[in-house]
Amino acid sequence: MDDIILALIGGLFIGISSSMMLWGLGRITGISGIFSSATSSIQKDNLWRHSFIIGLLLGGAFMFILFPDHFFSYEISGSPLRIIIAGLLVGLGTQLGSGCTSGHGVCGISRLSKRSLIATMTFIATGIIVVGLERLL
Amino acid sequence: MRQNIIALVSGIIFALGLVISGMVNPAKVKGFLDIFGEWDISLAFVMVGSIGFNFFAFKAITKNRPRYSEKFYLPEKTYLDKKLIFGSALFGIGWGLVGICPGPGIVNLATLKSNALLFILAMSVGVVLSKFIEKFTSH
Image (cartoon, rainbow over all chains, first blue to last red; front, top):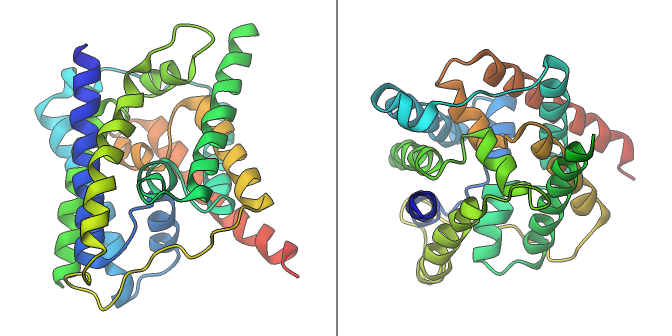
């Protein structure tokens, strides 16, 4: 139950954040897009992307310093090869698919976008399949 | 300048949300995807909380103009295409392998875990790869 409440609260924060971006900048908070554009150029009109990413890092650091055991007692487990393949697929897939869990899953569905609903169902489905297959191996 | 401040603050709040909800924890994410095993449904409520809020907030916000921008930059495509499905499928596979997606990937860098850095580096290469693929497959 606690986990569900934390998920709801976290989700609310994510909603507030993305609504703030839409209200202030008129932009959708799709982190895969923000990341790829931020890492491809540093121009004056692109600075908002860098600011957002710095915000992500600051928020993460803040929580990590204050509550390391409460929220960060986990490992990112996997062999280097697995992590590299996963990263490649996430980077490639989110670009081709025009979005990720924040862009499609949160913002797109909130706008009742058919594309985002299908994209979200697709990446959740293949994620479920991969985890399921690994159980069999 | 105001845009950058709002983006910075939004980024901080977004990170708080990812951490509090457990989205930064790969084991929790894999548990959410483990519906054929030990299913942990809790992360589904991240979508409930975020979409629940945004559905109404977005409606209200889009009635007016953005506060510090001349216009909205909203996705315009409405049709489904192979790229969308294929890309999303690939993303989901990567997500299921380690349990990290872009946002949590970036936030995890703050923990200085070496696997977090490796993931983000690989993700960056994947982004570059996508640009090559799009160049080669454009008509």
